[in-house]
Image (cartoon, one colour):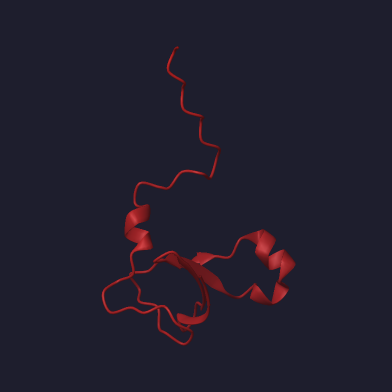
Length: 84
């Protein structure tokens, strides 16, 4: 029986090469509401679909750290929500 070819990954299913670095929290950082997010953690704008569903999130950004999504107020870099 011939070997099966692996199923091709759909767009968005693969992890970027540097994902492991992004998943790891910096030493001393604990993801919690009110925590200051260090500059070493890159913040991204929330996806448009999220902002359309929850318009009050328009001014927030997010980061993915240690398998958690952090919703962050970008000016102060303060965590306002942690999604496990």
